[in-house]
Image 1 (cartoon, helix red, strand yellow):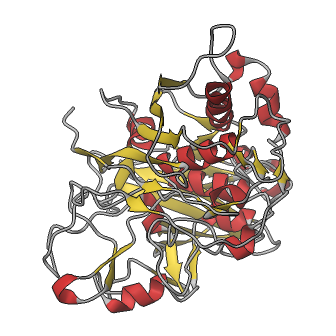
Image 2 (cartoon, helix red, strand yellow):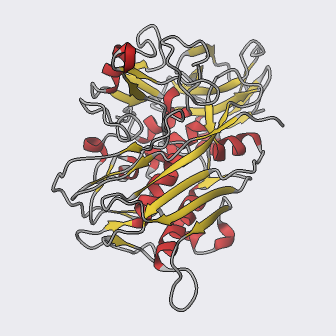
Image 3 (cartoon, one colour):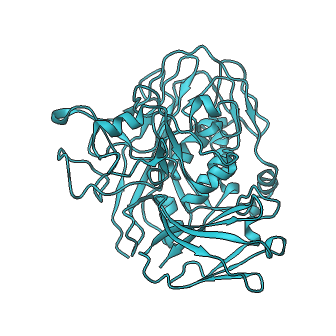
Length: 447
């Protein structure tokens, strides 16, 4: 199979004083300099402890129960005494094993991990991902991180999926050796930082950036099929986005709606900085109590922290804190939270624990087949809701309603036909009860 792919350079360098900025996962591959994350001293240590969910702890207790095989190539990590992995590698591997209990893939994920002196005493580290330009046969113009692309297409490649490096010159790291590790005041939980960076490498990142030059300072997202930008204001090849981008709204309108947010434009930059960015990811919204989760959009665009994180003021000290832009000294996070996992499920990841639901029955009890589909879909309703009436709609990955279907339930089933006119892509099947507060969203793929 011919696959068009790119490798992003070092995403972000993390700096800290008493509070630290975590990195964003994608940078402009046409610029041969790393994207710098630099935040002022907030003087706000954080004593939050977010424990790993019980179902994942049970899987970690038996390595044979891991849902994904993740292989790490360790370079420069010190050996322990006696010979064997040192505390740095053990703490890194702890983060790897956590992700392996949460997401499921038939394809091995390869990580290139480096323990190096970055030459800057304030630097923590950074990460980058290999990206593939779209699912074969699809028309959605989405560039997927390699690990997700391989999971969706059941293929593999010869390069590492995620690259990361962490600063060996620091003296204030805390290296957890198990899930009970509690960072002392003034020390940074290495496992939490690694969890965050791997999360970006798995797809929690967008292309939203700013650029200046002859066009003035503008916001932009779309890249060409190689993930590169050009000096052209209206490059006809700049049509590609990441899964994160497709789920971002500004004041309720998709950030990819060029009628409202031309790309590039000062209007788009304003959207990046008006504190009005949210995610319309259906499952993430459900896991956030029905409210679209806010993403980080401070009044001034900050490279490496703006756009590709959950909002700090909203989610700090909550179970969603892992993928916010800041990690404080003393803060311990061993779980990404259901809002993040819900977003990852909407991107295309399968969760080890099964699909997330806010209802009193599991989403896995509702069956949609075949999936992928060509012309017809059958929905099998669980007995608890088989007699209810529903509004059913098909929504594209940009949040646009493609079809509204009047449900006709027969023997607990709903059959939807005449779908051959849909483009090959990922869609969402939204099922809303007209007689209760149940709302269910399922990801479906047109082949």
